[in-house]
Image (cartoon, rainbow, N blue to C red):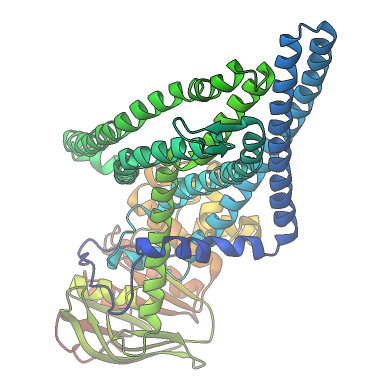
Length: 597
């Protein structure tokens, strides 16, 4: 079990450690290759590289079919100009062949591309999810600055967008490069030579430089008009993620909201968050407006412009109709390849915005790890020792603002002891998180015992939406424990009435009362039978008699286990069930241990 966040624990984030640089735009590609590049070197690299090569070869095949279609276009119009029925029928047969091959190549390309998109996404999701969910980083990130809000959305949505868009953009970029080289050569060979009016200068392959000028002007204007789209797309995706997160939080706390009649406030909050989505949507719409208007004019002129500039050659008899149509099509293909940045500016903006959100989360995790290993960093060291005791040496706990919550606390707890730690709620809550390795702010050392399993029992046990059997066995698989052990643990923890629902799947956070949820936590203790048990307010839903019965049950069932109970609701009956009590006041050294016999 993982410790829960105490409502009294301070939440502001500390300053970023000096010398740790967040993601910068000028290092964007370097950061992308560092994070995503190892995908092509992972243990499945043979299959991945084969798929990547297949995708490239299929792209080459698509380009080859495009070139073939260009030559077919010339042959068809020449046959029409010659009024040759036989020639037209031959071209119809050729077109059927091109058509059939195109269907096969396009289908194969689609399947390979989608497999690669999904596999890359799965690999990157596994990598980032593993880092985020390891060593309590998902919790510790709450106390660090940086752009890492809504990490779940960044992993679930932004990785999907970034990987799908990156492979899609990579395919169209390679396609455009190949088209550029091949159709520049075709256009050069068919456009002939044009004499500059009023001079004796002749320009060979004159349609090629005109295509470059046309595409350069279009790309330049389109890029200028499309620049606001990058910022507006990033802002819109952030607003959308914030809106989804707010709805998710409302769903998770639906009972508390209903009991407090907080629906109007939730509606106000959701409306405000959706209002930000609307504002960013309108900003993106205006950013699209100029780009789409220009793109419409640019695209409407593109089919007509090459015919107009090649028409003098056709009228003069230097070109056949087929060559004219081939030149016009080659001009369109060439300018289309040159216009790739403008045509894809929206997708580039979407891909970059998502990639930057993923990189920001990765950088936040790296900054967190770097601060842990920095030699001059003031932090609490938590490590396992080879001794059968918990040793706390000169432990000082600070809050994110730097205020000292606990000053130079030292103690030792030996195997089999039962110790009650009470005092100020902020101090006791922070100590529990420190023992669990979740609270690094401060100084000192915590040496965890090395003689057996440790189990942390928080105030609010986490109950996943699984079968009750899986919930009881969490975080282990349900196959680890026998059915008899599970049933016995449920009976001993006082939840035998749930036995008929052992294999039912439900939202147990909402179905069970707070006291029943805490009993589930104790059933887990009985199943796992740890040598060391650390509890924080784990019995606060019980009255004194209920607390006494739970603790007596633990003593009876786990007589050799060490129990450390952390609470700020101490009373004589609770103290009597422990060997000694430690009282921790805020900002002071702890009171002398009080032995209870």
